[in-house]
Amino acid sequence: MARRGPVLWGSVAVAVVALLAMGSFAYLHRDRMAGGIAEQSLVQVGRGTVTVSAAAAGTVEATDTRGLSFTVSGTVTTIAVQPGDMVTAGKVLARIDDTDQRDAVSSAQSSVTNAENTLSQAKSTASATAGTSTSGCQVAAAYRTSASPTSTPSPTASPTGSPTSTASPPASTVPSAPPRSSAIASQPAPGGTMPTTPGAGPTGGTGTCAGTQAGSGARAGSGTDSVYSAEQSLNNAQLQLEQAESNLAGTVITAPIDGRVLSVNGTAGTSESPGSSAFITIGDVSDTQVQAEFSEADVASLAVGQKATITLGSRTETLSGKVSQISPSGTSSGQLVQYSVMIAFDDPPADLLYGQSANVVVTTGSAANVLYVASTAVTIGPGSTATVTVSAHGRTEQRSVRIGLSGDQYTEIRSGLSEGDKVVVSGGG
Figure (cartoon, rainbow, N blue to C red):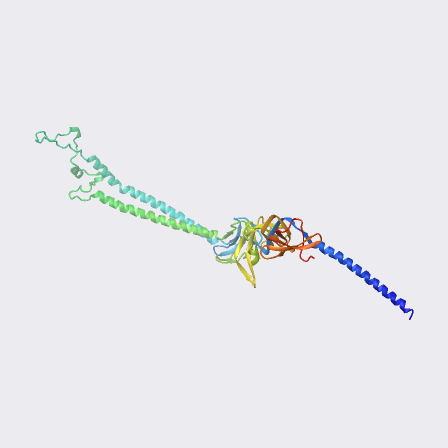
């Protein structure tokens, strides 16, 4: 029994020493860990630019798309493009058989030529008829002018009141022809027809010249009707030619704008008719945008013209853009409401693919040359109030601050802190 005492006490002493050593190691390790946590949990108040942004995912879309189709029925003979091809305005994209349309144009052109010839003949006939019908009256008028006698002077009263004889005109002025009425009655007109004027006959009748004029008017009216009818025929023929040429143009699909072919819905040898779905669809590359879906909370801070960065799924670099359109109506998926927002590229890449995925970040607010601190160091209160934990001289204290813009990374400090102050981030001691 005497031998067991020293051995027992020796074991106890060894255990005590081991416990003390473990305790000292744990205490020292705790101090080092505490110092490391405190060091990592402190951040300084800085000065610079604070930005607030909203992010969303979307797809690349062509803002200006054109669905193109033939305007007449026919069998497709040529398809000159395929999806993905770049085309320029005016390029022929597809054709259908145009045999019937070319024949119709040729026939309509012949009709126009014939109508033009008919109109020319009608005008010539009308002009000749009008010239012949007026020649007789023109001769009669000329005869009456040359046959009219000169008037004799009126007698004058004598001073005594007795009448005096009428003075005879000089012999050179006496007309050789009898008075007007008898001259017209006795002298035949050229061709043996007696020219008369209204009231010249014994009964005061109209006379043959008036009758001739009435007859010539009827013949002139007939000529005018012929010209009018020919003009109508020419107008109709020209309209038919325009329609035939339009139908011929409808057998070809050409690109109305520079762009990229998005789809081709058909093959050579198939029949196509107007009114069906677009045969070829192209999009304007210069007007390409990203259609992104933003949450109800984020869309309230968006505005047209705000700057954005775009990251395409197939690229690592970011592209610049801006908000171009915000949909006024949202779409619901359960309790989540989203709004479509169009983001236009400032300079879209040439090899951009429609339908590819994209992530966009829109800058909704910015403040330059302001104090800021990490947002995780700020506890937001009501209104623009907040609190931070400031570390100074080995001690920490709660301090109220007034904040401005609050982003995911940094928060603007308007009062309560100074540049260089150290504050504890969330989770620090």
